[in-house]
Amino acid sequence: MNPLPEPRPRLVPRLRLKTGDTIALGPGKAQLLELIGQYHSISAAARALKMSYRRAWLLVDTMNSCFRQPLVLTSTGGSQGGGATLSAEGLKVLSLYRQYEKTVAECPELAELTAMLNDTPET
Amino acid sequence: MNPLPEPRPRLVPRLRLKTGDTIALGPGKAQLLELIGQYHSISAAARALKMSYRRAWLLVDTMNSCFRQPLVLTSTGGSQGGGATLSAEGLKVLSLYRQYEKTVAECPELAELTAMLNDTPET
Image 1 (cartoon, rainbow over the protein chains, first blue to last red):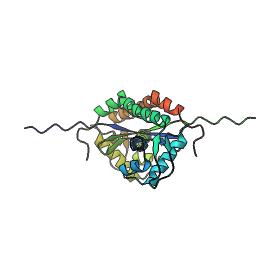
Image 2 (image 1 turned 45 degrees about the vertical axis):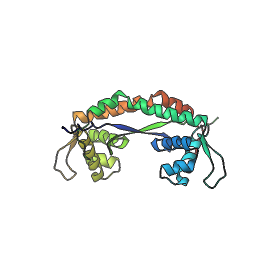
Image 3 (image 1 turned 90 degrees about the horizontal axis):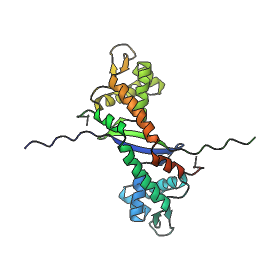
C-alpha cells in the first residue's frame, strides 16, 4: 500500500479586528462568544478554553465596550459568577465574524499565495 | 469654532497567514519584505523597524522556507551582512499580500461589523 499523500500546506488566515489599539474581535474572542452561547455561562466557557474566569470576564468586558450594544448579557449571583447569554447583537456579531472568515478564506489572493507555498515546510 | 467630530472607530483587520504552526506571512513580515526591497539590505530594513539583525534574518529564513522559491535573495559578505534583494516570487508575494489586505478590508461583513461598533470605545 502506498502511503497517503502529504496534505498540501494551507494558508489559514488568522483574523483580528482592531478598533484603535483594542482588539474588538479575534479567533479567541469569537470562540469564547460561541461557547458562552452554548453553555450560557462565562465560567463554563472559560473552563472549556482552559482560561481563568477573570480572563474570560475581561475579554467579554472588552467586547461589550467595543460594540454599541453588549454582546454578552450576564445575570449576577451564584458562586460560579451567574448565568450569561448572547444578546441579539452578540449572535449577529458572531455570525458576521464566521461569515467574514469564510469570505476571507475564499479570497483569490489567498489561493494564489497558497499555490506558491513549499510542499514541505519546516516543521 | 466647533471641535472636529471624533472619527468613527474602524475595524482594521490584522492578517496572519499560517501554514501548519508557522506564520508564513503577516503584517510584520510583509513590512520587512517591503523595506528589504527598498533598502536592498536586511540590516537596513531591520534598523528601520528597530529590530535586531538576527530577528530580521530569522523572519526572512522562515518566509524563505515556507515558499517554494526564496522571497529574499542575499549575497554574502560585508560587515553589515551583505546585500539583499527581493526575488520575483518575493515581489509577487508582497503584491498579493497587499491586494489581499485590500480585498479583506472591502469585505461586506467588515462594514457590517464596523457599523455595530461603539462610537466611543474605551481608550
